[in-house]
Structure formats: C-alpha cells, structure tokens
Length: 208
Image 1: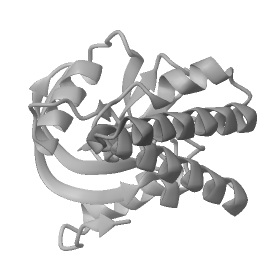
Image 2: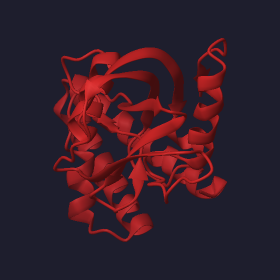
Image 3: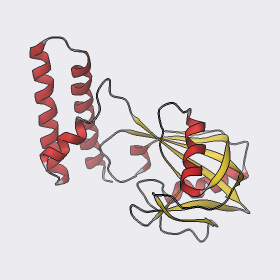
C-alpha cells in the first residue's frame, strides 16, 4: 500500500465519518441535506478510485447508521506442538488465523473463542492479548472501513478439526512452512512475531 493511497483513503473515511455523524445528530433539515450531499460526493470519489459502481459505493457507505466508529476484527493465535493453527478461507482459498468481525453481545475474548470454534472446530480459552493493531498501519490491502485488529493468544482445550461455511480446511504449520496467507486478514510478519511472542510470555501487548 503506497503512502499516497493510504492518505487518500484516510481522507475519504474521515469525510464519510463527518457525514454519518452529522446525519446521526443534526436536527436542521438543511444541514441534513448537506450531509447527504457530502455522502454522495464521497461515494463518487470511492467509485472513481476503486472502479466500482457509484451505487455500490453508496450502499457500502450508507449501510451503517449512528456515530461512526472503527470496526473490530478479532483473531485467535493457537499453537500445538510448536505449530500455529490456521484455516483456509473459502473466500480466497488462502490461509488465515481463525477469526472475524466481533459480534454484538460478546466481549473481545468471548468473540475470538466463538470465531475459532465456528471456523476450526477447536474449543479454546483466550489467555493473553497479544496485539491491538490499526489495520492501516500494518500494510494490509486497502479497505474502505477503519478497522482495529485484535489478536489473542488462545489455549486449545478440546474439540477436533471441522470446516465451516467460511473455511475449506484446518491445519497446523511451523513458522518455516507457512502456506500462502490471506493478506487482508493476517500478514506474514504478524504470524512470525506471534511465534516469538509465544516463546516470551513476559513480552507486553503490542499496539498500533
């Protein structure tokens, strides 16, 4: 991701946040009209930058209501015999740490345990917060929404490998034989760092 594209995307998401927050709180009909116009302008900019249709871009931008906040992605880091648990994503046939969007009604630790079980069949317990990253600072592919990624070290307590509607396969890998990774979900340097983190329980949580 180039610094130019990252800066451009940051401007767009900030503009959309201003628009959505304005629509959530404004009472004046004229102000509402201006915020709606701003949303349409941002949709045109997103469409031009990404190549998608303006209507599609507008649907993405107006999908949520209320005050704009970052989305939260939780990922589980679980080891067995010095190998890391990965799942093969049905969306792109590449591999990732099990996880996904945090559901309402669950704490972050509860959400990651739920996601691991649903995607891999393994029962786990979250034992340490390894990292809380801003997705854009980790050189992931461009993504319209602002995302915080939370990584938990998890202990496997039971279960057995089982695929889901989102996964094609489940397996454990050494750090020297990792498969092709789904870079929008996890980066190679993150996984390699988590191998090191697991060997140093005294290390503090990473952030940003």
